[in-house]
Length: 254
Ligand SMILES: [Zn+2]
Image (tube, rainbow, N blue to C red; front, side):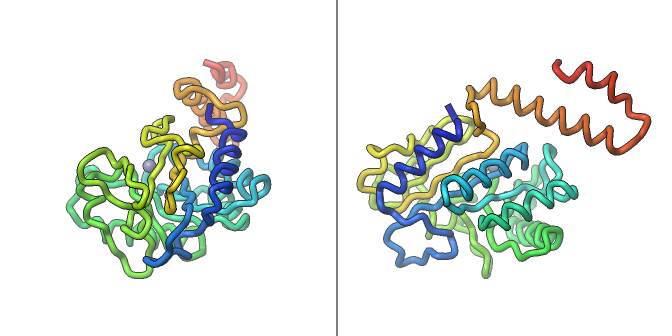
């Protein structure tokens, strides 16, 4: 499960519906049919980079990658990660902000988003025109946040908020929303049967879940943890000559 091969099959099914795969910026209130491909980047920019390459070079599709700047698992502003982000842009994908709601939210979400958009734009060296909210509350979704000249991935043009359930939109005349959150398709799996009759759909996937071999959620976290550990090991080793590389390598497989 969650192999690139499986992702390829999902894209094949989506293409077979005949619905156009569009960017957010190409969609207006009058757009009657579309598929939006969105990726929220948690834990690992490296995995996002691989998926972006697979999409552009193997599947010939372009999508949006939303990146966090206030998470504690990756630093989007390291030289290496900025190179990754720029490379994702070079492939023809779009970059957005994946906004992490502050724990002590003072209610000024719009200014928080604007501030982070400015910071991300500044570091990447290109304007960032879109955002998605990490773990949005029902209240925030119901607000339909608007910021001038900025795309909100949860705006009513791309997403229909359901007041009475867990975001599952079973009305095929509304915008379908499917997501692989927490390594499962809890709103439904994007297959031909489910997509039949659907005209507008937004599909959210999380690149950290996907890999060449694929795996269960637990196994995926194990390999992800190993990748991060390897990354940290090499980063510390590059940083200083007194890092006990050989000794630390002994713990690499713990
Ligand atoms: Zn998220």
